[in-house]
Length: 508
Image (cartoon, rainbow, N blue to C red):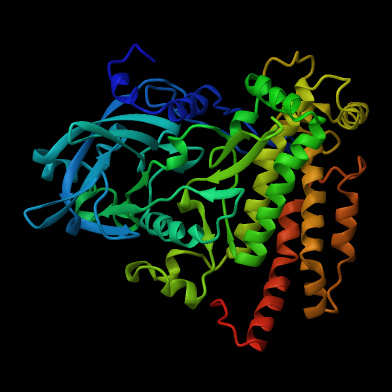
């Protein structure tokens, strides 16, 4: 960290924040999560792909290498500004009556924003920046009256990563700010969100004229103020992915040991049960969802009065939130953020199903895999019994490789229908927790009331069979189907109840 003179700027950060940055980078878990089922002709017939194809360069989030980024002071009238409240932040100012914003251009996006750079070259400033958990999520340092003001920003990256171009389209920029306002009133003691208070999208004429599609969709930037919990003492903030992978096993193992419980009890009580509670409350009762994965979710670790670890959840990336807002909620937003199309797509239900399935693919699979490789044979009889059973049935390569010694995060990515096993140990516990929460909150009961003829037999059979070694769910995505086969009927019940009580209903 001392090799680059730019680090001198970031050394002014509080210890809590520096520890967070260290965790983001040293615990970065980017092992491939893909698993496919192939037929006798080696054609993929089931499974999923989720990789991390990206350039391994100086801008990579895994490097401790700050870089200098170019910023350009441009009039706010040269684009669309979305903000929660009036007033200035670290990247806005007023000069001679003109409101301006410091638009930040990632070095990999210089060609895309060539017209903007050319027009406002005379206002250019150099801004020290450091990648956090992704190429486009950055910590920046700005001079502020003899001191340094830090902020977290998300910028458009003109590069394809994981099969998608990493630009911030106008819809995401608008939604990130509006969702920050909406979710602010939905936070709980164990669940908070990092505010995104401002975003900006330059006008089309400031984008490369060859990029006609980008000119239409926009390519912007999001500002995130540094929250107080990043600068105060008494806790430790890490990304959720800090619990994934062989390299991070010592931290996960230490938390388990401190909890004085078995791994199954710790993971269930500290992670799976609270996540199930939040997801059911969000998707079914409050009608919004979050992209819940290792990068978007942070964990706040504290020790309670008995010196036992306590975990709270912090969500970042408001652009990945999808809300179905009623008229009352819309009118609580600033007028320029009330466009309903900015917050949810007509395919809310299938998207929510994808999000729920994604928890199994991107979070629970990684937890199961690290325990499969690292958990000793004597501490948790329940888990070890399951692991032995998987080995007897020949499914072990879903989480490891033949002859692997537990020193890598690799697993077999291509399987036959006889060797593929979709849901592992913690996926199945999470499934049971979801059903328990939904039952306790009356989800199934209310669906039955509004749809008395609805036939659950097929779905309930799948619920029962998720634990069976004879039904490894080769084609059936259980978590996705859970949402798709219950959410429409629950919404139908909610809307009927609202009409009876003359409550403002959500727009169709």
